[in-house]
Length: 67
View 1 (cartoon, rainbow, N blue to C red):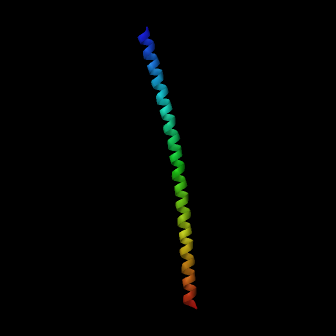
View 2 (cartoon, helix red, strand yellow; view 1 turned 30 degrees about the vertical axis):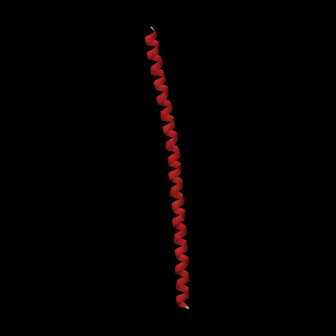
């Protein structure tokens, strides 16, 4: 009887451990997705700023050439 109870307790604890591990993995995945989205947005903003800066330099250069 004690062996059966021990086996049942071990199975329940194992199941709970797997459940907790799955929740931790899901939470970590959500954090990683958020970080990647943030990095993507920052990259787009940086690229946009670079394009605007290059356009400004080009306009300024063309202005000097036309004078």
